[in-house]
Length: 336
Image 1 (tube, rainbow, N blue to C red):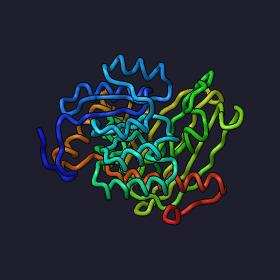
Image 2 (image 1 turned 180 degrees about the vertical axis):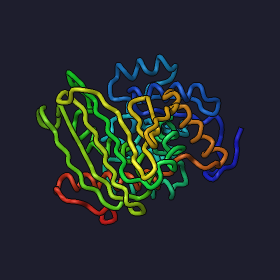
Image 3 (image 1 turned 60 degrees about the vertical axis):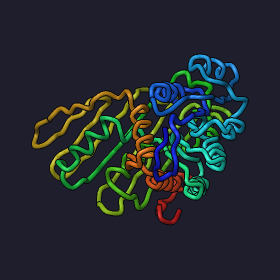
Image 4 (image 1 turned 135 degrees about the horizontal axis):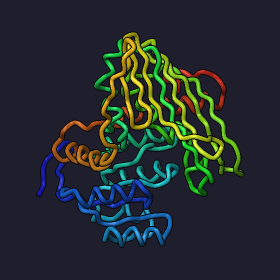
């Protein structure tokens, strides 16, 4: 079966190769297997034993490395769900080979590299989708639904603190492989750009503690944001490791007429001394929803729920935050 869409002729089912064997890759594999429009074919990973087990559990083939996987003629679409530091080179190679490509954010750790990859995808006329499932979740959808009720927004703050003791010996605590915290955790900034529009300037502070060399045991990154089209002040906090002692996930918006407070999986709207509880819905099934919407876009030409341009614009803000943290000065996003 085939259809004509904006990317040309699409033959179904789309044959899929996965790069990566971690949590996101496993959930993605289940989504591809359950989706009638895709056929999971092969996987490539960094650890041969984990890759072999992944392949057995999914009843697919193993490939020696991602370089070979992206060149396989029997694969139409590549999913990149491996360490952040490898995203850019893998996605670039997949697109150069003419493969439609889905990548977990960030597209690349370097903003300029990401810009080049987006241009390459347009030139090759293949799909490039950067996953941003935070936009599909109940918290974000509820925030969108209720945001007008707070009136003119004065202050918005998003904080995620993860206590990890002992710190795992994993790539997520390696500066080079994980990347600058707000680039690696791009969804924290993307909530702000999606809800409040373009960010004009950022002032960021970042600190690592413990560890040796590239490896650290605690990081804490904070950034203050000013927007182009609103006087609101935004603040994002991201921290993890053994030097932080209590888990916290809180998103709050204060405005002229009320406030929205989301603490963990609970939300309330506060106005005139009264609180209204909000139903945030389930957090499960977001990867499957992401895949469904991406396939609708690729095959039927429907609008995607997030564009590469939007993800790239947020990555530019994250790059400005990195520069700000390194130079200890406020950075105008348009200058990056």
